[in-house]
Amino acid sequence: MSPHVTVPAAMQALKFHSTLKIILVGNQTEIQKYLPETPSTYLDRIEIIHTTEVVTMCDRLHSCFAFA
Image: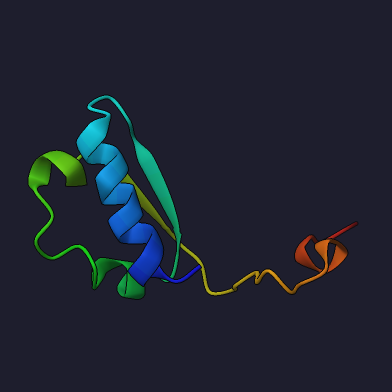
């Protein structure tokens, strides 16, 4: 899913669950576009892991993993 859906959903979850911590995985620049007015109390509970690859709902499972 796109950050325009997942980031606001994550903010809602943080609002209702005060001990929740969230890891957002994806393009960090794209994710941060949706965080400019996020309260610092929420930002303290968010970790962003930058990735350059995307797995879509149409991708086959075996193509998502590197097998040795």
